[in-house]
Image (cartoon, rainbow, N blue to C red; front, side, top):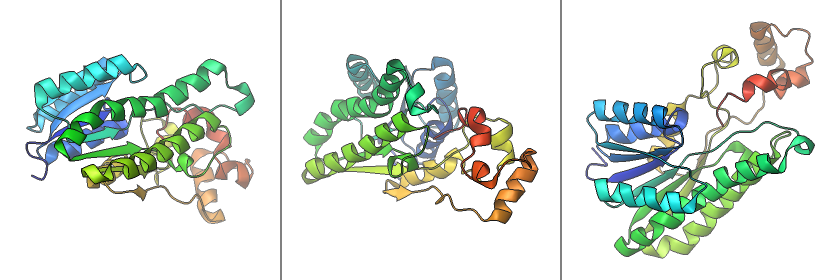
Length: 262
């Protein structure tokens, strides 16, 4: 077991990618500190981790609140030991035309997807520096390397997260601290009709495997589909009258896509 006697903190661990990352580390013997806002689902993840034979502590946390993040890390280290690996996975996904975004929505996305990750980095880095070792994995998005219509806030935050990752990697590499990012595309998160029908969506475990490997990778497809593939999707979802360009960018499924992962 590669992570026996190591403590891993995973944010956004209540479901989807975060839950799968936690379970993957649990398989390798890690002690898991689990952070998220949704307590009930977070406790479910903790139970699953413990059933696999690993230790887990669930810590409901608003990652936008720096004091709450500091308290989360303090509790995790008090109960499980120093944080060896931080996985910043928590985030919100908001599909909205730019001119329809409210100030509150913009602030919510940026404070969760970018500032929240920075808060956790700030909380764990002093200890990692003191021990001269540590690993941080930031879960960005394909929209952090390529902007997308109706995802201005999300893209801005995820581009920023990659910038944060690169800056911290250079700043703290002399302390034997590696800071990397993974950039998944659309990932099935919650079961719904579209997610069930579009079979090629990567699963959370696919992203977890790469986060576990702690390498900078882009998991998403390049967005290119043949007309035959597009037509097949049209047939499956009963949207035969939609133009191919609409299907290519999933305009016909805008509402359903809100419930999908990153």
